[in-house]
Length: 404
Ligand code: NIG
Image (tube, rainbow, N blue to C red; front, side, top):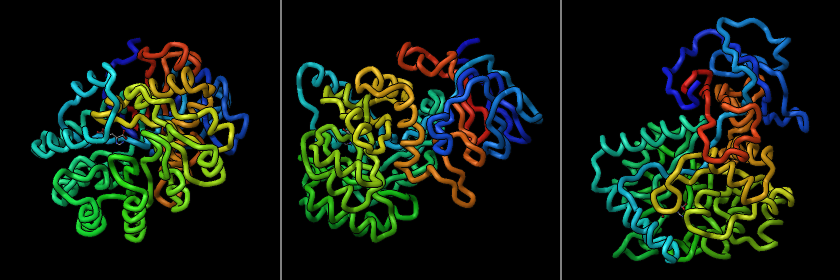
């Protein structure tokens, strides 16, 4: 069968048995070292996992699908994207490939293009990107504002993001717009802009980096957003060593993302904290940056997430299969570690790894978790790295509904 053949979303009514799974990566923390099952099956009902175990012992269900020995894993949890944008920065990319360094200023180019795009067109662009992500096995997705950079445009971005993504992050502090004093802009972000977007967002983020926001400005933004009840995330240590990681850990941020330039102290601080280190392999390739030290972070005991960072400047892709392959081939994670980082790691970065009333956990497959399943057109998950770039996504169930 064609690996990428689109199919109509199936009904999520009743129970469905997905059987014949040759290799099932449950990523279930309760299973410890034994989280990979062979000859397995999963039953989904009411959007959640109702049963997981050996296919030979599976209970009956209203419907059944036999995946004929294919490997399956939880859907990807993409915990870092910037999908609300218009325009294209391929000229900037070409200049980078010719030797120029990435600089934050390109965010202004996308901000102009986004502001000039009407609501309906922008909504269509975002919906298309989400559909691409799902087609590639992503079942839970965060996205950010950050290409509006004034109150009206950040509010528009927050609304559009809230309609398209599972989690929304306010990134008014992405770049100081041209012609505005930085401190005055931080006042705007912490005051009227935060008030406007607050009903649509769960998270706040800041680009704590040279050319964007200083550690002091970043702290001001993060503290104001925390006081408004938002969870915190930080873009840190992307372009050089800096205080982003330390600030994120100190303020109890759920994640610090990029992490390309880490000191030994940064790694130790992350390992000793609940702050997830989110690495962005596609971004590192597209910016020709030193790869984030995912191997060292895992070895030190830090929780690592892998995300796509889809945006037009540094990582124009939602392809999580590619990110996972890169994490194995280039960052030296094992396939199991990379899968864990791109599922449970992302869920931890969004504080969605544990079920709460009415909100099933994501990022692993266990009874009660959301029925987010990614079936590969391959007998083992090793093929994600062994056959990089191949169309390996065969089936995707999102909250129990078949989408691919
Ligand atoms: O995560 N680093 C900051 N933000 C994006 C890049 C945004 C852009 O260049 O448009 C990132 O890489």
